[in-house]
Image (cartoon, rainbow, N blue to C red; front, side):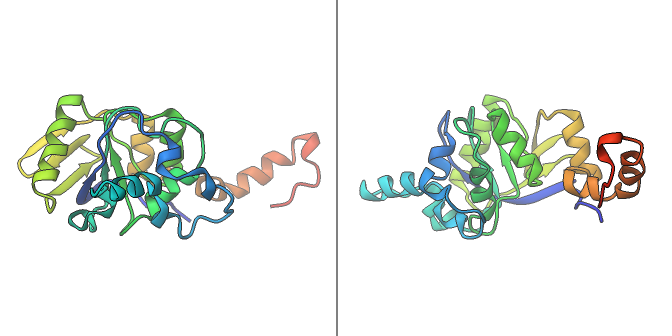
Length: 205
């Protein structure tokens, strides 16, 4: 059993501008009662989308130009607020499925939840992110290339260096980002070690 390696992710982008977009906005609290995540994608940014629709405007998640997007583009401190796993789960399940989130910065717990789901979150500078957002807004069919090997986000002939903790980056590239899979590949060693620990007597795997 091995987690899928994440080396290069390509796809169109969907730009969601704004700093400090919290998890309440990403997925409203009324959807936290579910114990499974199927169907959450259609409710991503639901309240924001409704408010904009009432004002005669389109949220990017309702804009048909971005319907094929697989890379979410954001600004600073994205995913702040509560620690709900439902937020990245909803993003992952929206549309075709978001496979990477590129932004200026991310809330720590949201970032960790994304890593656990296999969603890389590269950090770009404010200037680079402004260029990337503008490019995608002007030409929605633009293909974005997130290269975890070269540590760059590319658009056409232009590439921007990104920041990501090297341990996290290597876990994606080597296919070690899924902690459950990592655990299951070491069952024999776990069983052996458990036998040497008194309070693990009777350990079963």
